[in-house]
Image 1 (cartoon, rainbow, N blue to C red):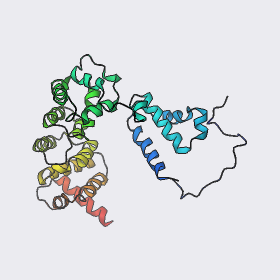
Image 2: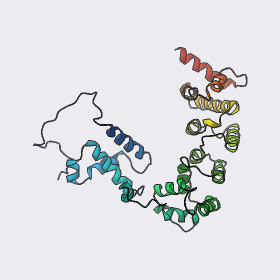
Image 3: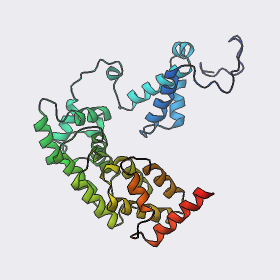
Length: 300
């Protein structure tokens, strides 16, 4: 028994008209549909096989009338709802704009609330509205009191959502306490990103670099993208020392060092500082070697 998507060898569907290889998207929203599909895949809720299966499971009438990228969007929508990321009401724009009471309950009473029943969007809604919701002070006090009691996945989701929210300095302290643990939390690093210099965050970064706790490619990538505002001559030197060490240990042959250098030298506020790293007398032999490799690659 074949399903509606299995069209191989079938007759009567009209001719196939090949297009030129330069035709990729027929409409601007097609680009966004593809980007949305790839972006939601990074949630880790499904793999490529599940994604394909979701499109194949569309109702036959929908499958036949939808265009190619309409099928993609419909499949993504079904998976988001099935995995509890969003509700159908939220997708339709009919959801209650107030934050989910389930998310609030989990923050107020993490010992009894079942965080696994709460969609990520509900957590995001609360985090983003922490300063403006009617009972903002009560919820913030609950978060501060219970933060260490949150289940690790809930805590991680909270911190990741804080990246796009204007959270208070007190809540930053919660995330700093996580950052100061034995294992560096990428979620805490993301949640602590801010657009201005923060002395507390700066001091933590310096301390962790000096302790060599940040010498990992994924951690360095987050710092370069989210915390370049904290960088001065001292922190930048520590950062590139760590990059040089990772590049050397993982045998990247200068590629990682060149990538970070190329990115940060293009940040206007950092350009002079980054160029200053090339001639600072305080650099280690390992950093000097990485810089030498950078010059040889540039000349080549």
